[in-house]
Image (cartoon, rainbow, N blue to C red; front, side, top):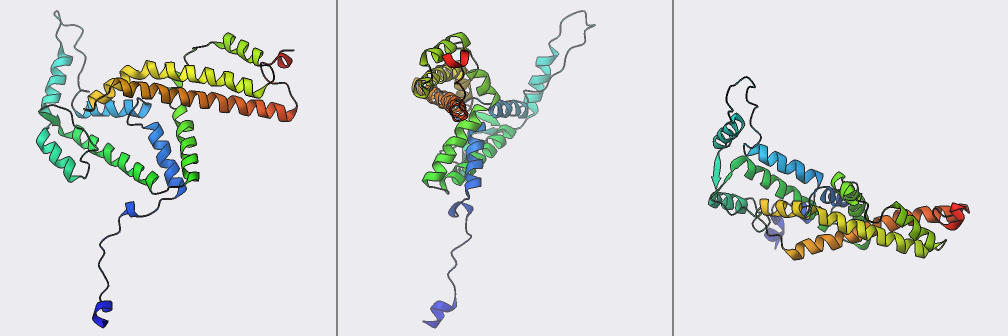
Length: 271
């Protein structure tokens, strides 16, 4: 009995995934997921694709001299030479490395004989970053964390330049939206409904515009992108747009109501 308690059990090294993350770590992970989504186009995703192209030798090239009496496509020749100089990794070796990194089933590889080694390194690094963020989110469960995480994802996702450009498409137009607010009068519920329609329309149209880019992003990474995925993205964006417009506009209406001022766009406000 003494010998049993004299030697402590060796449970191995404690992994960070077994510990609970703080609320700030979860919200930070939610914010990064919104800025760097895996399933839709964003500014960070565009930067990643450019770095991946440069790592594969696609960023090389130079302009041909202007004094040549005949056209010479030196840009293409230089890019081909740069790509040939970048080392390759066979897909079988790449799959073995992905399995060794513990990313099997999480990192799809393109259906081709080989992949550029620096590109594979970037893909593995991105997969580890995504997995660490998902682990931080999963290690802080709870209703408060879920609510704040959703608010963080919506708020941060809307400030991405790509989303701002897509959601800025004037679907209804200022004149028509002003008419809808005028018809809603001073009813906050009716005005919220009008803003919900505006936000949903802008979100849906903005997501539809980005669908070709989303399709290219998925197929470039070796993943499938079906019509169901496209519809899911459009519906989610419509919901995000509706929530964003209704919350921001509703907060302004509530502030005006508390101050005793006329609501913006209402008949009293116009007078």
